[in-house]
Length: 528
Image (cartoon, rainbow, N blue to C red):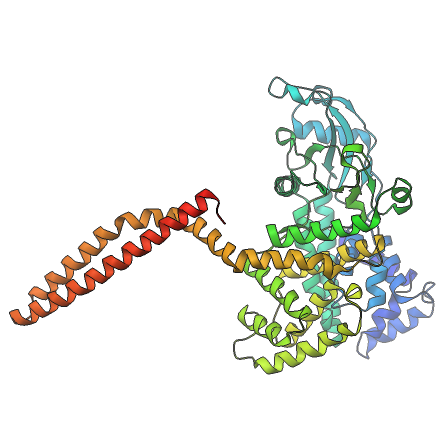
């Protein structure tokens, strides 16, 4: 009954904001299209632009639909530009739940009264979203952690009863996606079920706050000594699935540009730092913050950390394998060198394009997509759009791009948008190229070779001492086999031949061992 009522509310909201004409236009001729045509005549919002109609409908349907619209806005490879731009304006702001409920949930998860954990606790939340809300407080020291006394913290608590609401709305989204997919070719092209499934994964990941805390902790470890990025410390003894406690960060949202400019922040440096931080996360660590909208990014104005980025909310992160990083770096470099054949070869070598694909055919497709960019100055080229075009080209060759790369493309577009808002003249390639070239040098040059030797050293250290025994056992086994052969002369000839081979093998092994030990000594002394 509740599900039917929710469906009726969705239909009414779509009618109210003029969304029914858009639904009618993707349906095949028939009774359903005729009914919608009649209803469209009375729709009060049908005069609005289509992107605005969709945005208003999602906002009226509630926070889960708003969040879905935000995720969908990143799929610019599937959506028309006007709709994607309008969806990007969606704000995930919902009323907070009661102070009493918040206190109850925190005490329940921490297992003790709030007064025993915090010297001060602000019951009024400072931020409230669809999944959780945040409070400020001051910690009380404990016997185990006396250093905690007086530390300012932020307490994030999961919204109560959110899981049934999410699962109910997701079930409806899947049903609507099936209807849209079956209704028309345009509906299938938008891949509605695929997008709902992707959103399902993101949303359920955000429901485990311990996962978010672990993501933040890993990124903080990478950037603990950085002069450009700050990430809050997690207080693990106070972190649970529904509640996490972290260091309070002081700063101003990057979206409040007037206040930042008045404070004297250098926007050109800020834009370049933001791009460098992102590419460092991607190519040096293969682990990146994938929800970088203005609400999750602040700028510090404290004297000792002035102008540094502050990252918040780590519910969504991306992870790349070495092969992913290698593919991306070499593709970007090949693109900016206009080496389209190399781009095509990389697609085939990565295994994402069938091995029997003709290189010349793929090269031509890549050229037709990428060449128009070079009519523009480099500073106007969007790496996010380049990546999106490359993915679109790959789909033409029946390749499904990996989810982690779609997430990367979405985040790269966010980073580019923020950076160019700060500095419209930013030359993104000039900022990113040194990072890419350094990574390629480290991975594929002599530094990469030495790093590989260093990683493999423990394995070879175990194998090398056993080589003489393995050689002796092999010789003994072969001699035993030779005894069963007819004729002493054949046995003698075989033994002589075996002795020559043995001498060569031992000589080669000794040379290899000597070279390997010299390499280990060089690495140990730091001469590289």
